[in-house]
Image (cartoon, one colour):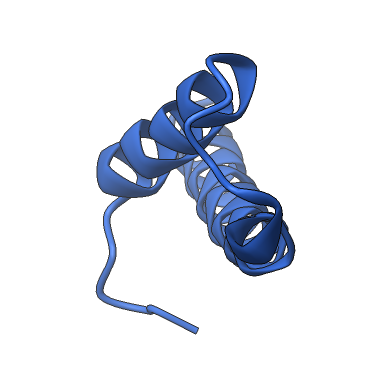
Length: 64
C-alpha cells in the first residue's frame, strides 16, 4: 500500500479514475487494474480518516 500517499492525493487519483470511467477513457483492458487501484486508494482514505477521527477524539477528550 502507498503509505506515504496523502489523503488528498489518494482522493484526487480516485476522482480521476471516476472521471476516466465516466467518460469511457479507460479501455476494457485497463478496467480491472483501475478498479484494483481504486480499492487500494479507498483503503488508504478510510485508514487516514479513521486515524484522524481517533486523533481528534483524543484531543477533544484531553481538553474536556
